[in-house]
Length: 450
Image 1 (cartoon, rainbow, N blue to C red):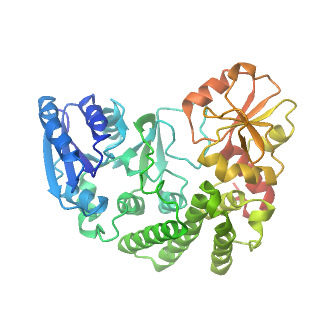
Image 2 (cartoon, one colour):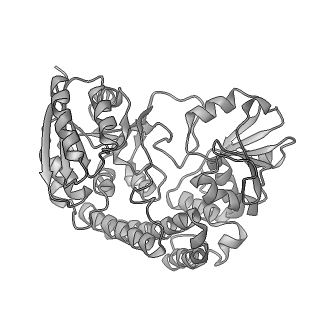
Image 3 (tube, rainbow, N blue to C red):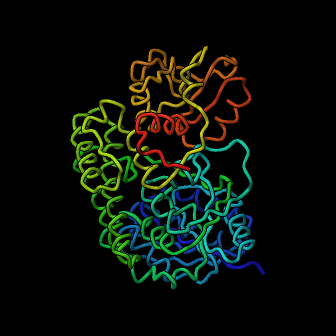
């Protein structure tokens, strides 16, 4: 008989979207699923949808548990859900996203192949789990990622791997082993992510990375992050997230020296988070230099780097380049040398940036500061006369690409776009490749020796 998988789904006021998620649960190619639905005090009809789907899920052969609570936030909901788990494996998808039909089966099969490993992660449909690294063209179905000396914990804090717990499946024995329920913090209830990931990455020696896009994360206009338009809201969210992570780390680590280092990383990332959000909104641009100053001050006062950062680093090379250099050094990441810059700067044809979304808004201006200036930007939403950083926006035209053209993809591992581009004769790079080369060029002292 198939082992049972417990799927904990927290639900709060998602009446427009939860049907699609539950349909994707019904369509799973796995027959033994315990669906634990935690209704977090919904008031928009979400609870009615859950009730209607109970029969459908039961008919599919699934065990269905519905737990109603007053609105307490997602952390309290996930905590209560974990208390109800009886399966051998656990996953925690969001109620307004979508699951590939092999989301459960592929991750269970991966864990079956490696009985000594307790966790597996899949890719999102548009993003890879290891978002700090440019995707490879050809890749095996899975990788056993070492977590010796908790190196993945530093990468997680520095956002070099995806923070979404929805792409994770773990053996339920970890709930007791790591005291997840006992240590779960609910008064800082914005997120469950760090309270799952930090204990796991503080404990487990390895993780299976399944190179399959099995989860579709749907970015909503009213999500916690996208709804933050006020600098005080953004700053408060960042500080609360830092404090939550700090409290979680203090429950996981018994080394003061390690704790001091990780708390430093949390402070650095708090400032980075605010700066990234500011980059989304031109109305907040006036606040950027203040937070860059806080970032530089935190770096220089901690003495974890072999050099000091210049206070005007954003004006000279751009914050994204500086942060990437600092992040690579602090996580001891040495990117593969691809000689990207010489190709990009030596392009005889057009230099094209693909994507005008958040990634481009955060990094492209800094590329221009470092003398990487695209001739045009391709974006599927581009309208005639649109510009970004004074560079014209155009609709993608793959057939127009020639051998002398170079394209930089300003997206996180979008496989469909990459596939279309690589069918052409143009040179194709991800922005991470260029960013790593720019970081090494501008911050020689921070290059990690292989």
